[in-house]
Image (cartoon, rainbow, N blue to C red; front, side, top):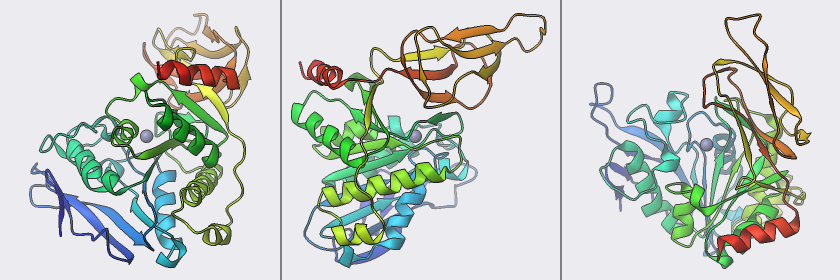
Length: 352
Ligand SMILES: [Zn+2]
């Protein structure tokens, strides 16, 4: 039975026992692809009647750690390693991957803002609809792996996307702790419309997404943290047998630090054209008033550089990678650390 949504289809049998790799494919009749099928890999490993995990990378095309981790799962696991089933989509937005781009070159679509459920609304929305209708619908847990792409570098951080459902928040918090990345960003519910997380949550699927480094390159440290975190999640959810994860060298969960990407976050933003000079590093703990970035006029060597300072105490959580900036470009993001009381307050605020 073929899986279809809009222009997207796949012949992969998601239900039969065993391990299979195929593709999902779609058409887009422009000058380049008018006589083509545009394909992305899709695989399944089905080991039993247990729960199903969907693991995805390449939602944005210039992010690589997730694409490697998902391919590794297929290479290193057999059906006998699983209590349940793994559905693996390493390069969700292949046109973006092939063009080393965050968004699709076909329609400009950002896949992670396209989970609206409309069919025949362009290639990017059709992919999102296919993922929702045929993959998320099969899953008890979805994992979507991101990194900073060409434009930015992130801490290795899970996303705790808050929702109005206390049970869902408790579940996502637990998944964040099990994944055990060094940081977990707590995100207000209103910030996530149209993305993978909110769609999975809307249909009752457990969901965790993350950022692993960035700069459109592969960080070995971020890759290994993500790999171990995914293995821990799969064991925790009863998909992967513990012996298989031990064979692959899975360590126990390190503690994660919760940080605020909500109302207390500080985006340090350029208000003029210039060249950015960082004065701090990703992961630095900074004090209120500390100098973070220096912005120089590109032409006037006798102009005094503008120094941008931190409005709060916190952790340098995201840093821009391209130093030539225009007004409105974010240079870095300072996330305050959340105490356990602060975290509880944010969760409570989301559910009232
Ligand atoms: Zn991304």
